[in-house]
Image 1 (cartoon, rainbow, N blue to C red):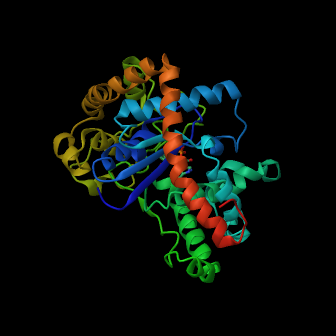
Image 2: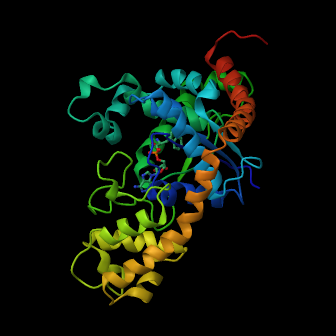
Length: 344
Ligand code: TYM
């Protein structure tokens, strides 16, 4: 184990899909071998867009179940839901006062999510990246595995860490803390599927909110649903290329080859060595087998866990207790640095 600390989060907003799995969760699982890891079900983030309360509870448990079913060990590492550790929201307020409006105005995810009716978006949706910075920095985490779409938010987290360290440099020193009180968290965007695209449109990201369920493979899909979605996935009329170069300007082919590579633990080039020159029909049949083989057991375990909410909740409570101990220490230090009075 290194001194490095991994933190990442997934929103409990329903339809956990192959993009979440290959872009993030697969890497969460791997990092457990080399790092201390904290994985968070970010329910405070979820409510930046209105959530039905009963549905939200179900989704918090579903993401937790997906973590465990995928191989995350909640005893060796920490798994919890964000709202049980109040320090996230507390540090986020401090960061609301550190981050600049100009920085948030550049966030493309806000623009996409708020759409044309920006006046009607919640204030929380706008300030979302500050809370995300707080999630990471309240543990002073150094490494953050995420999909490509979170890159800009991670850059903002780094800016916030740096500005806090600069703004409070004298106080940080006076209290005897290291000069770089907050580390610069490194994004870990790795693997052949850092941006999984919609199965219906290779130009659109696979997303929880796409109205077409055929655009994504959900982790809860059964073998029949997976097979149908892969068979119906959009392709082009050419056979698969033999070299990776040939995937450029063929977004649907590139996406399916990337998914195959990520699921099989191979490179795209190796996948093309096997399937290059062939038609999509043969490749798709192999992709169905591979997907069912890899995702079937995860879906089955999630289903099992969904019947034992007391067990899932106990994991979240235990994880939250351990997370809170770390977060409280950072938050006490932040209060001293900022100049708040607190109980000694
Ligand atoms: P969320 O819940 O949208 O997605 C969870 C993770 O899945 C990745 N992801 C994808 N990767 C590849 N292809 C896709 N189509 C795809 N769609 C989603 C995301 O990049 C993410 O890693 N803001 C975050 C949650 C968050 C967080 C944090 C992450 C809150 N606080 C602190 C890291 C650190 C989000 O909305 O992820």
